[in-house]
Length: 155
Image (cartoon, rainbow, N blue to C red):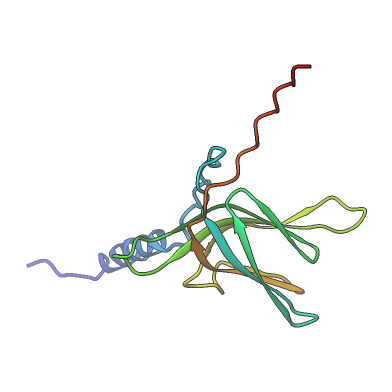
């Protein structure tokens, strides 16, 4: 009868470790955000919180998908926002881009990626002066559509 040496344990353990690493949300490549909604379509709103660590002030920002908001030196753009249906565990996610704007300098990209409300420390902006994280994603009213140009008046 042949002896078993345990040489098979290492390849199986390595395959298991690889499978677990590939399944983790941080190891997976981040998908690109979806295209912007057409004008007049309802756009979800991401509810973000921003902290200025110097002053200790926290501000809640409601940013519709496709819009940008300012917080101190930060320009925060929400590309998309989604939340799970009620029958699944609650989760809100948003694809966010954050740029640092300083006078006489080009804006510098600080963060570009998905933020998860259930784990703000894993996928939020962690900066020496600022912290930004998502708290919720909610539906919104349809975006305003531009008014058609006025017809010329007959004289």
